[in-house]
Image (cartoon, rainbow, N blue to C red):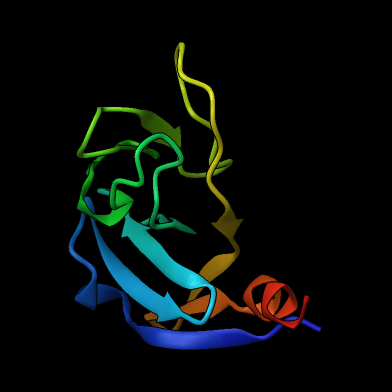
Length: 111
């Protein structure tokens, strides 16, 4: 069963910026691109644990603020020569509100 959490208006997330949603399983960074596409990823770089929500958003990628690892926000995969993956979450915008799929978060909590 898919459950969506309303995390607020799209306009509360700056273009090429992020908002952090705290969950029982850790923080999720919800990003907004320059073209208003929205992505949700774990807010922790697998390299050194940098907060991706404080990274630089460019196109559909984000660069970790600590050591410049770049992640595709659609897949969560590290780009270039770096290897790693961050978890992604389904997110959508309806009537100007950002909705985060919490089914994965709830499933991991139950495990």
